[in-house]
Length: 147
Image (cartoon, rainbow, N blue to C red; front, side, top):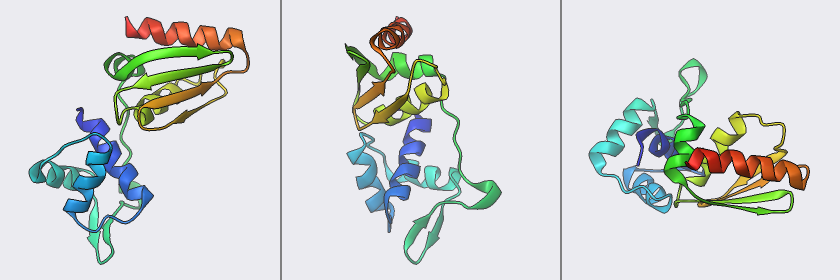
């Protein structure tokens, strides 16, 4: 798995609740589909500028706050999307485990006028469009990215 996606998963895990030590962080990442060793985890903690407090790891604050740029949407779709299923004005996009949220974030950044919003789980994205025709347009765009 890609380093940017793994580091985004680290940040998301920290936002969801306290992570006391690296073992807890490894477990949280494993649940998101990332199997990492201690050395890789230590590098991620350092690169993300996380600090260790009495309550566990803390996200950076202020100007040094971690903000990772997403890879291009075409690359994320090509690498992680498995299937696109239209259902009226909705699209159900299946991804590999742990990839739905970064793919949905990248799709959101496109600001397509045909998309009202997205909801991402672990391996599924729900895309809401205003009508059936808009849903078809978005489905075609995503399928074109798949190649």
